[in-house]
Image (cartoon, rainbow, N blue to C red; front, side, top):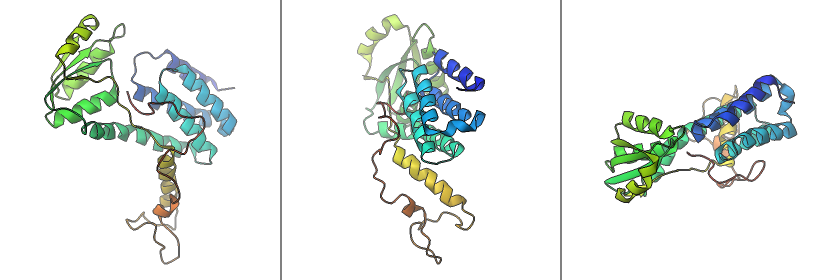
Length: 253
């Protein structure tokens, strides 16, 4: 049984119909981490998997929520400290948008008029990256009623210095004819093997006798110890899996 604070948090996630997927993922991670603090016995792998399932079902359309909470549960089940896992996954989410923007530049057309809908932090990162390279003429944002998240997206793009126009939903499809492309989602896969390696580097860096992590980490030092590169040896670059198979769209929106 979950504690009342975690139950309330899950209920809040289920009722949230306006936040972006990235924000929901952060709240989901904080909620499952809170469960391990509220009741330490909930670090048990089976219990964590059940909590992850509950949070995932609270937002069944948000694949990113499913993926991050099950990744958290799997990494804690491996023996990593919950707060260290939380910090690392939040860091991955924070830096993902910048990496998504850089990847988008590989395909972003020049002098584009773009149509988007609703609010997406990842789409915003892509548009900002393209704008900074002079590739955006203007952005049309559909309002996305009834919550009208598109208005918030337009305001954010305006603060970024991007020429933007709010478009009523009923005329959005018609206005698409005057655009270069439509951008409604952007993703970057979070790989559990990379997160696992980052956690192991953190552990190694904290060892009292290890000293700072060096650029030549991986070579034996004068005590015969190995640095951080050796910690991740043998881990393939692809996702090795953690818990259930991840849904598509692990990071984005």
